[in-house]
Length: 43
Image (cartoon, rainbow, N blue to C red):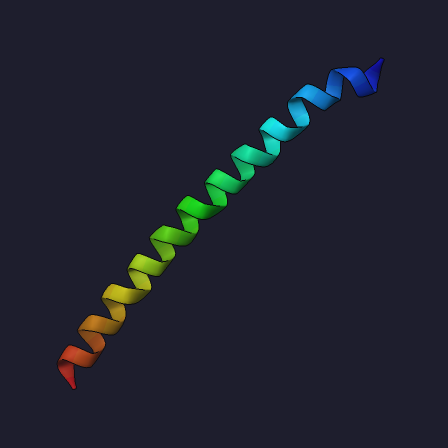
């Protein structure tokens, strides 16, 4: 019974985790890109 209760929620939690990780990763990449642009702009 517990498995039938967990199985519908399990893919949802994985999807939420992936969305959260991808959004954080995008923000991190944008921050790094802007930092590199300013860094090379000062050189």
